[in-house]
Image 1 (cartoon, helix red, strand yellow):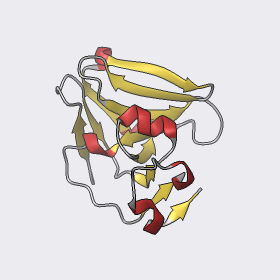
Image 2 (image 1 turned 180 degrees about the vertical axis):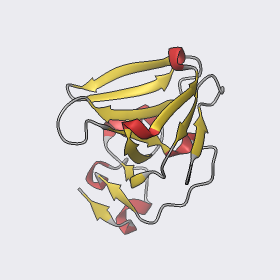
Image 3 (image 1 turned 90 degrees about the horizontal axis):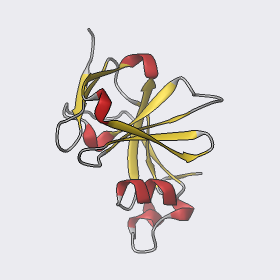
Length: 133
């Protein structure tokens, strides 16, 4: 195995393994991501779904359809946000990993802030962050 990254939820009921480094690292400021994370933005990296292995706690993962095409997954024990994915269309075979759940150190080669026009008014640094919509 070339590079592998382990992760888990807050209570460790769920643990997973990524068989490849996360790609398309982004920090999303949309209202759904803010609410799902309870923070100014959500940080995600994506991998092909075939590169994600649930090591423990698959039955503790709950799926929530936050919109008609987006599924969000979290731990039912502690509430940790774990993944989101599209249920159809382009990139439906990829899954985005909540980077805060990684236990293995990870440094992205590049990253971007998304939907900064929706940023929380109390979060100031968005005015200087690189922007992509």
